[in-house]
Image (tube, rainbow, N blue to C red; front, side, top):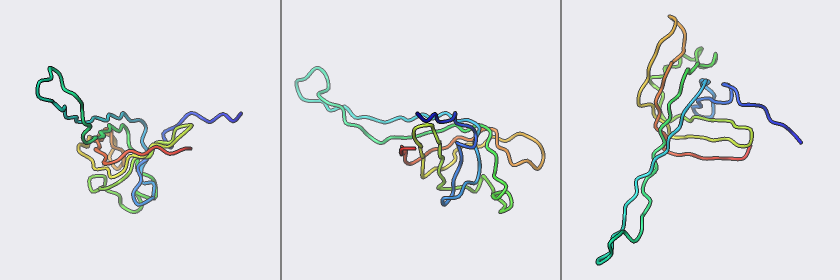
Length: 129
């Protein structure tokens, strides 16, 4: 039996065009979906519910730019259409088509670290490890 390790911060990262640009210390993810109820004449309760669009919102904590991304002059405020990759022991979760909606910074002068970033993702995909 092969035991897989516990995920670390290097197992959670931002990717642009297949290239790792930052590692993420932690995250929380919330998915929500709107639904529409179908009502029928004469019925006291809805007869069905139709699923609507799904929205994925993620809160990332302590994002560190990679050395390569810093050398290339990465600017987190300019990032668009990126992916968040989360490597778990048994699978990978990929949130793609990401756009940031809120960025909170703190830290030392010259450090490429963001404290909190809120991200909205277009898609969520799970693949085997």
